[in-house]
Image 1 (tube, rainbow, N blue to C red):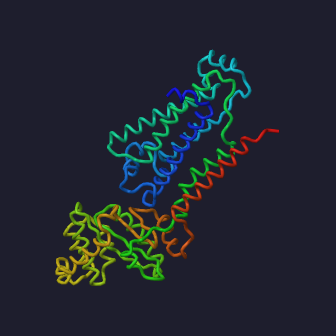
Image 2 (cartoon, helix red, strand yellow):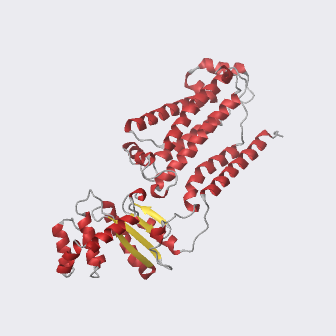
Image 3 (cartoon, rainbow, N blue to C red):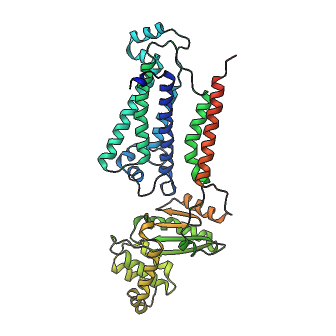
Length: 401
């Protein structure tokens, strides 16, 4: 510890700034997940990040664009700005001592190192609080923990920075130009958000891809008629599919959940109605009524089905085989929730807005766009960051004429 006390102020400051940048980058990745959890590569839908996204704490700070990671990024940007504040360049140690003797809030603001320590110290307390909250709910978000640990590290390093500056006549020079710091921030925030636009398309499981019809916009949907999310998606997706007409090859597959008492009877009813050419009308009815045996019987009667054939089909071995085949196409190890919808190269979990679904359909209709694998994208981002640091350091070190 005594060796650390001998570190020059510029290293303490640089350590503080690097900790803030790590927290900023992790917050940007978390923000990208919050904006599109089903399409995020940073956290899974069964991860601690997703559980905390749905928690009461996250709801308190808002949803969608204005969510907890956004507020975290804004605060981190403010604290990073404080670390770049210069103060009385060329001042003497006596002048700094006089500011400390005056005390009060004025002294805190007049000395950049104390302002930075106050902000980082508060951030460290918040980081410890958020880590404690995760321990209390028993769910850990790895990105949240990175942010929390970085905030605590920044607080400790800012304390070391304030101590190392005691009695120093001047603040250390900036490690990078202001432009260099700005470019670093843009890349750290922009890279996670841009990744969703340039990453390689989702790898559709081969057994799903085998269902696709060449030359069509392929849509394969796994549903449970009693699932509220499936019902909402049906109301949004079906009008779009009618709009696209013959351009779309649509298949509905059944994945009834055991906790829904009438999900499997409804799936059997849809399968059996399809054998009589009434699969879609039956599905429309099953999605729109309160499901029970009477509702299923009423739907079959309203559609004019051959009831003898229909009831024989409900308990037939062929219907059992269809349900087993559908379940095998979405096994438990790949199951992340319902509805699960494949639109072209995209896998979509849960309900979506009309705009999001139309975007997926248009994407599937276009020729394959250029994309990057994750390793190549990471190398590009790393090279860009290294270039910014090299150029920013060179210019920061250049003498002022």
